[in-house]
Length: 408
Image 1 (cartoon, rainbow, N blue to C red):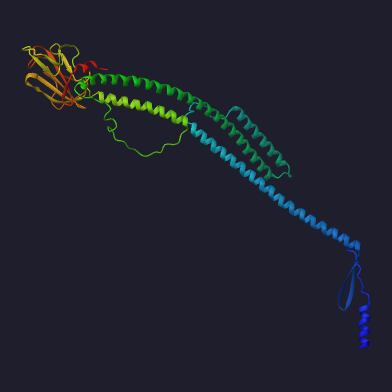
Image 2: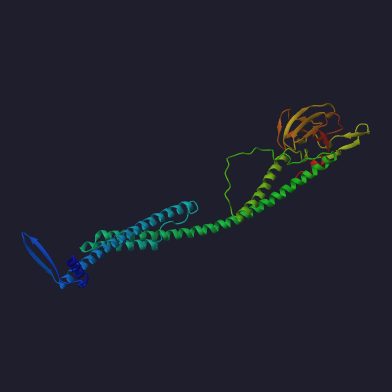
């Protein structure tokens, strides 16, 4: 037991050995055993340094080759994208040119759309240059023909793009000039519209003056004729729905102005249409008033009597004409009226023509303005050749003289 303790104390008291650090490239030995025999290979420090340098050189060379390979791929890919972009730009330019030509084709019938002489000369020089490049490349084996042809194709595309850009600029110049001409035409058009507006207003004023004149005798009877009373309900409306595009304020204001002008034109047309059915004007070209409308002395016994029309003295055989469109509702001998023609003009108006020498129309006939109804005579209760002329509005007799004098 004591012996064991001594041994233990001996071990514990023995100082620890500290292992020294060996250099990185210290000599190395490799032992190979084969067939019971051993071979020792020793690698010196210098050999290890040289081997490590060679290994690093190979790694750097491999990394560089890999990097250049990727970079070359990126360059090629970028070039391919540039070629595609160039071709796309070329196609887009052609499309734009076709669109521009199509848009102004009708407006440029007389313009010259051929390529200018400078551009033609440029194209010829480019073709000669391309041929020379091809001749050089055929004699040089070190030149990459595919790459050269690709470059030529790109150059040709760029050349065509420059030519098309030149033509496009020329067309844009033409369009700008056409737009200026269109602006001038718009100004001229507005002048025409203003003249139309002026003429329309004058015509409407004339018709309104006529209507004001014929409404004077109507007002005395408590009546009034409104020429536009049926305008809103005159005609039906319809057609496909086409939404109106939004316009800038300037165009909208202009369109509103033009709309007002055409509304006035529409009113004028309606006025003219209505006035064709209003008996305005003198039914006998040559006459003098032998008896007015209203109260008068009776021509046979001098007693006061009510006269429903006016007597227009004229020569026997003078033609009597209709002053408005209408339909003949009566054409016959009618006692004191003698030979009588009655015409319904619509809008509440009717006219009567009495004491005719001859009647040219029959019941049911449709008359136009200035159609001949008959001849002045002295039939029925009459003292001499004259036309007894009556105008009725809604069944009420009114003074015909304002209608005769209101011819516009």
